[in-house]
Length: 479
Image (tube, rainbow, N blue to C red; front, side):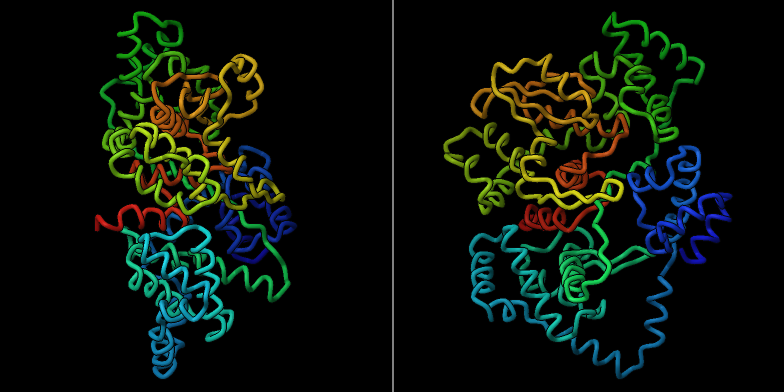
């Protein structure tokens, strides 16, 4: 533990945590990377953990407002004119097409991109390996940030279909570290892995941060005073009829409910359902709450999935071996069936990643990722027994009962099966449930929900390079 962390703990009146932080070797860098799962293990006492999270959030918020990092300023001050000139010359020397076509594997990647205007997961991984090998050969295992930025920008300039429509367009490939946060992107991740293998030094397991960030959530104004809201909430707790009054009271108390749920960020779905039982036993209440809290994006999945996303998802998935079974005879299917197949293929094209629970590192299989998103069970499954077997799963997920030709779709939330008319509607309800109940995405399929959140619904949140690349392909012709 360094002096920065020690001083912060003293400043936050949490000096009793110093021995634990010293034992776990928490320094300034790792302090800013702590996630909820790690914090639960590190600070088991809830009161202390909540105080720590509040102070850590303030540090992160303040750092975001800084105009530039100290490291960047010092680096610029220390770099002389001649060194700066050489850096620029090195950074400008990338011809990505030539680098790739110098190898047989790279040549096939270039041909594939030009033919289909997209890149498969396997092709992208090979492309990154080739480019990083070239980078290390020329500049060593620690190339400058400027060099990596220029390589990333060269990639999207020479292959426009890989350019993201947001930001500068190349952040999926390399995004410089800022405000005490490490650099990210495919190139940076590969460089880190290569350095680990070269040095054979200390290894840190890669953790999966949850991208859904409700800390900056702002609530619309409520027209109901607190006393009247309390009366309506009490009535709702004890009445399920008349339906019109239930719906109206739920609508008028939506803001108070959202604030109560997010009050300390520790409530479970079970606790919320006990306080507000009508959320789960009255159809449409989850969607109504979401519409009140996010009116501009409530219908984006159902409106845009087929016309904007379906065909692009199917095209990307066609390059993956795991998708071939689902894509059999796809051209003869109706648009609705194609839509269902595209949704089921999201776990195929958004690769799972390593995540950490406590000190253990996990990498889910494709089947585990798919089941955490959409669980497929045969016709005739005993629903009562099935739901009992899934009682330990708190995260919402979708259940398909049947096969792709004939099935029922359900949103499973806290052991309650909410039947929906279509698979798309079930996914829609599940996504909205994550927001209404303010729960984290399951780590096994967090990339899928992250994609739906930031790209489909257009809600703010952290994004991985895989999500940025997929968005770049989907909107490549719309820029």
